[in-house]
Image (cartoon, rainbow, N blue to C red):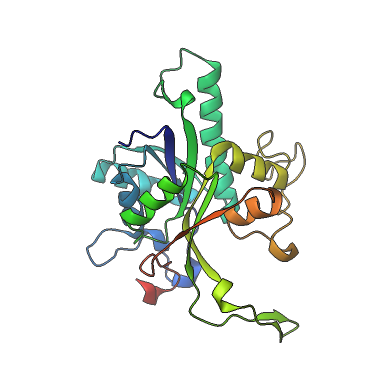
Length: 266
């Protein structure tokens, strides 16, 4: 492990079913050429990194047993939690933030709590939120993100766009952004735990006081205030929209860190 005072927790978001891949099996459970699943590859990348201290898997509720079987089969040492995801990606992020934040608060409030290493409360806790559908994330990317977290509260991974991008309104080209300023987002996206919790709390005010979609406290409505007034599609969008004064540092990604979206991507 690094001598850094950062305590880095990788959150593997595997809550979806990947309908665009086709078939009845969620894409995160599909095997790659070596026989190991997409999810196993994603978890292994963070399990093997000396910069990662814990791993939390957020899984579709119907398939949690598969993740538990993988945990035993692979003898993962860093996986502390396998928790249910939500219908949308942001709900899975929320569930992970709640789990980890609640655990830390409990540890701080109870000195006799033995479930966490005693050094945790003194360390700076970061979450690295990673799409399970990106199984080819490299050790270099993980290391570079963790290194950037030494100086930055929010860090994302992106690669330059090689294609011209159009902004569309009513089916017509409304604007052609300068391609040199356009980056394509990848994961992991990493944040200080208090920062990402505050951003989601602002986006969804009852985040830590009610169950998602519950009647008490009210709201199961989507997050508001995405880029351009739309729905934030990732954690960076939530921070960008609701914590506008926080700089979001970019780490260069890699073409191999592609997202598996269609069957042909496997």
